[in-house]
Image (tube, rainbow, N blue to C red; front, side, top):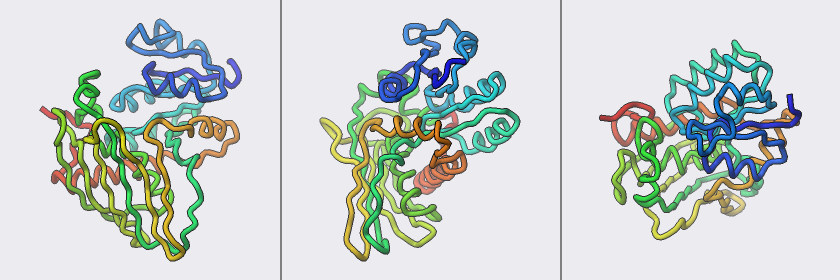
Length: 287
């Protein structure tokens, strides 16, 4: 085993970004697209015997990749990029797989590690904005983008970090009410999502998310209003710098998110879709 080493399962943009950010020995990338793969096969990647295996495949492949790795690795660390799984049942199935293995598995919500401390006293209300630019050419680059089965829309893809930050800072969500629409591109999923979330402490959070912003990203933030004033929390509109802190905290065994956290965050998204469409189609095939 190579100490402090990592192998990325998936050789796309996110893997390359993270590899440049972290202070680990990057042994390589495995991808089914051979032009992006260091290893000739997954077996070669496993035989390289890294400390950490980072799942960075398309979202719909996360569960099958985790299942495969857990059955073949022992006493390793496995990380999973967002969204952890698209389907809620995959969280339940993964729990059993992880318990039967000797590996440690962590979902990645890297923005948690770069958040400021809230200083507004008792919280009254919050507003979240995600205004990104994702034109048709973005979705045309990969046929899985913008599909229910493999990707999800602005809530799942661009907005999942904001949903997670709301839960992390303001508490779990007990009720949602959303409207969704596909306005600016030809895809299955939504590029506009507006709604409200009510936390267990009865804080109402208004949420506005879109990828119709042109010609570039505008703003991603969370504004929290309290008895001592208001505070605007910027949220990165790219991968941010939190991966470095995430992987440093792995070595210190000081991770501040769990699989149950990831499950709760994804449940909010499923509930939002159910509110908007009458059912959640996320992770399911759409004819």
